[in-house]
Image (cartoon, rainbow over all chains, first blue to last red; front, side, top):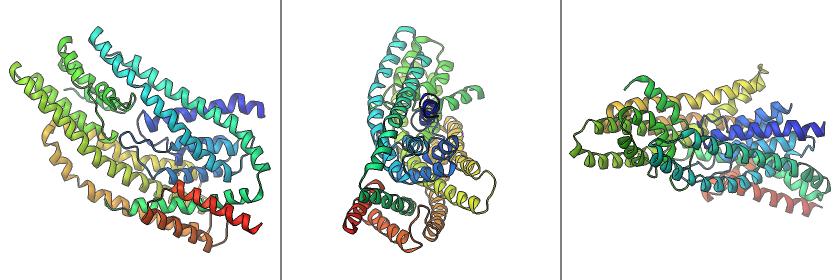
Length: 208
Length: 257
């Protein structure tokens, strides 16, 4: 069961998360990459829909705060919800109280990767100029496919590696952690619904 | 211009961010979306090349309103192609300036409407819908809620993309008047009010029935009030408030031990 999780299910789900993440960054912006959808979807795939739903809603409320305006890179809600649910619903069963901050931290880690990818993509403008100079036309497939492929691959590997490494590690750490720390994280989880709703109400009540 | 060309531009506009970089931002995506129009009006490679290079300069706007900028630019490119040689240079300057100013102005409107109003309101309404469906024990609550969220957000987003493209092409510089008639701010305010009402109902429910355990009423209400005050008056982000809650929890638990 555990071997099947790491060799089949986890790679497949990491791939799904990476594909969905394209919507938030590169293609469409149909909102299918929002944690409010990714959480329940991953929960359903793992057989724990209620867990996916609650984590998805929490991550949605926490990531609504900032908008991807200009070059601003808010927390990646897709990665947060995806890794959070996989950590909690996987065979290592990381408790929600720990899976939630882990998802937030991993999404912040993914922001660095995203920044590198955006820097790298400058090369495609140069290639477009070269295409126009050489053939008088731009080879769009030659630009799009590597750009999208690289994003999917990097995000997929990031999600897989995160769950693969941190799943057993966090599960072990939770068992060994002092009681006050576990209580603190449980309190943080209880507070998170109120914090998220406060953020939502503030953003909706703001004057425009 | 045939509808097939517009359809192609519309479809390609979904890829406007596909090569987003810090240097050019959406420049490649914009050129890719405009490509069918440029190919149509400039069959000559030399002319096409000049037009493509014109649109490879840095460009950035809100993705949902990109249709308007694409439409106006496509319309102006068609107009330019029909001008005598001597007037083209001057018109190109006007076109680029129009493209830049329109992209900036529309980005501000689009950000406030889509990111700032529709996205949180859609989330609040979806959470409320899930709560209702769960309470009523309706079949497939997750699927219905997800469908609702996608539909509520995408219906106006797709409409603005398509109508903006067509309207921009037909009205060009005068598109601004059409956009002003849409009363974005008024609509955004209405959407926010609906979202706020939904969020307040969800809040009341979460205080009465705390979703992640804890005592009835007092604790979740106190936590919400603190988080609200920090966010509203101190501008503290939810992640920082959460970190503060964990630290507070650790201190409290250590003291109790």
